[in-house]
Figure 1 (cartoon, rainbow, N blue to C red):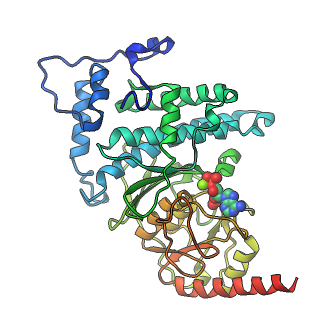
Figure 2 (cartoon, rainbow, N blue to C red; figure 1 turned 45 degrees about the vertical axis):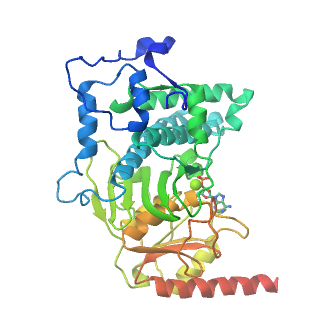
Figure 3 (cartoon, helix red, strand yellow; figure 1 turned 135 degrees about the vertical axis):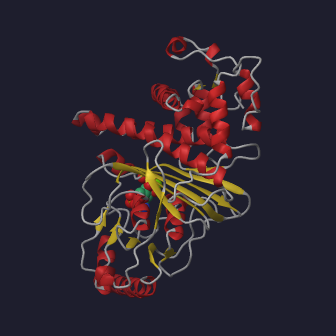
Length: 428
Ligand SMILES: Nc1ncnc2c1ncn2[C@@H]1O[C@H](COP(=O)(O)O)[C@@H](OP(=O)(O)O)[C@H]1O
Ligand SMILES: [Mg+2]
């Protein structure tokens, strides 16, 4: 494992060595249970057990004990529970990395704001962290991930500086987690972690699906973005996690301004409902539900902030047909799915310009969070989304999401509006 990911042990380090706590050797008399990741046993032994006995015991008890007994927590132990814990940890650490990069962008002067390299650093760094954490946290078996980035550009000589920056960022972020505080990834380790995302997905087996930073435009603006991670099993989305560092914990129904505390972690396992918690460590999840409104007049709708990503004139016509009174709430990324799942708004509309092909990582996590919150997500013809076709979604025209009561009238409004749009285009 260590060799596969180019992992450097503390003892073989250069200048960083002095900055890190020394590995703790296990007292020989202490009986320590086997590490919880059988496939990575070699990794731990090669570190001369650089994890404290206390930490080992803590890790074990965390994985063996069901989720907290507090009344609002998800029902204990279901299929994919272990995968969910790993996904939450991976997305939360990636969010921490992205937050530190976004803070730097916002502090920088106007000239460097035009520079896109910070988002590149955060994108690659986020993918490396998620890939590494999932691989470490989950036991043996094949690991497949469909993700947005690959390392081709990073391997070029011109990317040396950026790769070094990513490596430092990833290691600094990993060091904030007790399970990884003695782990240091080399540059080759970062590159191979990123390249674990080159799977084609498909209808058989299990595949993680990752968008390391969804909403890169929002990220650069200092607005909304998300780390979106889902698991496909035999072509179906069975688990999803959305980390939205800038999404207020309180409803954004009336304002998209950042009021109150921000940082939401949405999660869902198929058949187990949708949940939200703060991105703060130690927070407990609360069950969420889509709005129950049946009257379009009371509905409000979400859409992309970027007009290039969705036809705002078409969505405005759909809303008018439905009788929606409120103006659209425009925010970036799959944070829209999260906000919809907790009932901040009633509808999400997405109608890209002709020819655009939707990628599975832009929807998989959001899809399961919304469907498990009681919502419906379909294409413009009302078909369920099919994530089994590889890296792209193969769908009719656009994507819409709402609750079950509103879907029939939404479908009619969408079909009529598309027809009108086609007719007026043919008259030109
Ligand atoms: N022309 C286009 N039409 C529709 N979606 C587009 C697009 N260009 C990029 N996108 C996708 O829109 C995503 C952002 O969604 P939203 O508009 O909801 O914020 C982008 O994700 P990334 O930012 O991860 O690249 C990208 O995948
Ligand atoms: Mg995206």
